[in-house]
Length: 352
Image 1: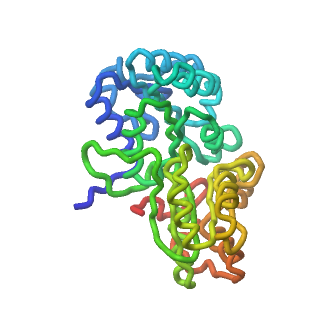
Image 2: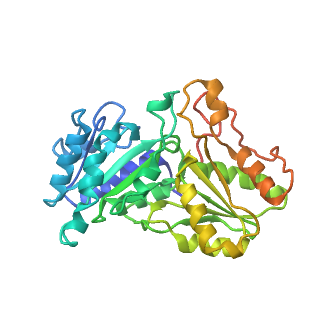
């Protein structure tokens, strides 16, 4: 029997289960025990486990990340939560120069089992300083693992895997996914940190996507199928490491690849996937790879600008048409963007 819960609740369950399984798991961050509890993801943890294991922190991101790294070197498994990735940029030195390097520098004898929860994506018209998708920064760093769950099922399973992994893991949550609903089993289960998820199968086109853009891809598939184009849809889950085996197997079958990213185009995760596929499978490609990502401009604040800045299912269909040399219709899309500023539409729930 299906057990449908929202993404935020799945994250909350993962944190609670991890803290029950291991008394050395702690979670902290700005808003951990405030009234909204980081979009609900930390609700009830302070009450259940006490303020020594679930607590707010000073507005000192770099210092508190250093505290977490030091704690992790002494048997603690910290989970740090940041309500915006943008806030965490102050702590990049600690993450990149300390956490990511430690195991390598000490020959694998010491590790830093820290999980950093960062929320990305647009919201409330917050604009350039609060809506950035900088996941490629983390995917670029050796020694870091970085995951981006799309479904509620993956949010819980990937977070549990991240917390109990002995490497530092950056766990990136798109704000728009927190209210998405899906079938999530009760109890402890783990989703591997290095395996993509094939959500749909088809022989005509490989679509590789991550995070919220996978939702738009699912909507686009409806329109593409109506027009005779059947796609493999691969939800990456992990951006470091990337599951190249699954991507390559699909491209060898379809001969075409379209990559979707929530970040700016240049030097994005999408760019790396296209580069590697072009290098390794050039002879298998029937046309040039395609990419849909954000323009190389700061994130706009106003509705007038953001309406033209972000990408939707309609863009996926139109780009696919270019790859096939056909003019495809977007009218088949059932869940188009019709909502007010910063809300995708009245369908904004799930399950998907």
